Length: 230
Length: 189
Image (cartoon, rainbow over all chains, first blue to last red; front, top):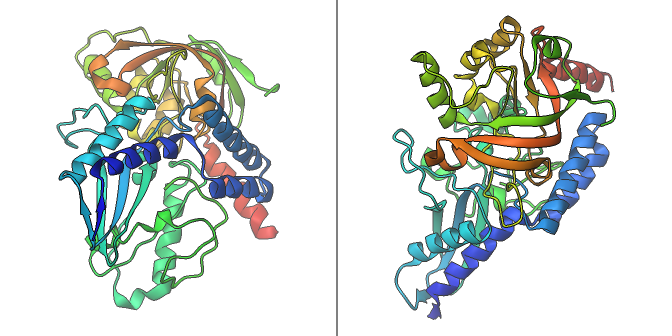
């Protein structure tokens, strides 16, 4: 058994969420720069260069890169041999989000109810995905999920005959429909599972896989030319 | 952007009529920020024959929900939001007299038709330039609906705010035509 401090979870979530909004991931920056060279359209190249400059400016001025500082998506990979020194793991995650929101001047983007609305005021609750795994470690991944991207999400129940080709076709259709509505370039995360609910909450989420690396069980060749935040 | 066309609101029909898709513009002066929630409230006022919180005739509406201003800044990150959120309200705002909106992404056919009917334009700012566009906003204040937080109605004083004409008052669509052009070029290559 290993004991982890609940308060350390709060601090870690806070620091990661602030970082996700302000500091560009180096792999992502490299992907931007590469795309800025390979993109055939001059206007596309110009815009990609502007996005690189924007990320540099954001870091220099300690400003979020984007006004949509997202919904805090927190993946917890929790070893079965871990216990916490204090109760309240989920509250620690939410407190971390709350503190990041205040200290980094992030946007309050969540409403209490999709129909009745009413902003929660501090960007909580976080969307927490918990996976129990063997071991005595806790891995925390925090993503700032922009709602412009979330709006373009699609779920499809496919018949077995659709196969890999059907999945590819669905992916291309989804990208085309999203077009310029979400901010380019985009990270495409595709999850598949037995139930629709499970497909969207698979371990750590496909969008958290580092650039240029494959998920554990890739069935499709992955060609990542472009990418942005999950 | 030395080739950019300067827009200083309030805009007249003539300012808008000459703009065509792909034109680059820079905006100088006062524009107003509003998203879904503020639009809903404004359209309700118009439907009841009541005045808007501010005169938007000839005005430019920027679809944005900024991050709060850190100390020493006019505003936080302030890039465009996805315009389809406002498609339900935009025709009514153009009918009222708004001359331009700024956002990102596609508009639906009803919005495109209303641009022709009411001589107006839809402009796009580059999605993702939250920090960069923040620097173009020199002053910001909430003028109505403070209870909506970031979704309030904002007044911004902007300098050299860059945008591109995506849908013009002739009914043309930069996204549609651009995709057609590039589909051909890439097919040839």
